Image (cartoon, rainbow, N blue to C red; front, side, top):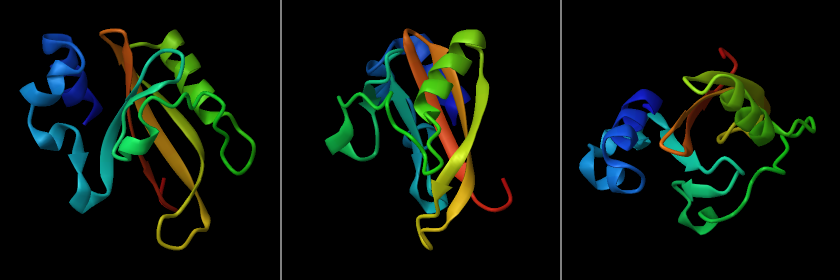
Length: 121
């Protein structure tokens, strides 16, 4: 999903890429997957929860105290073509902490991210 969304952003810029690419490039609700986009400072530009768009999330910590958004920003600064970040996140069904991996890539001045969580990460 990150690669597809990134290709759309490279071709059309953000946010025009949203209307120029298929919906499954950005969200797959049946699989619990979605793309979120932030600027290099950590401000959310696209998120399925529209209420948080515009918020700066650079100070977000997982329950173990890791600044995972800062890690994503740093990882994509070092490896703009794509980087994985691992942190702990509550399972949406059980609430128990499980590992979560987020893949992120810098393109067109933004950071494109998608992650998945679970015991098998």
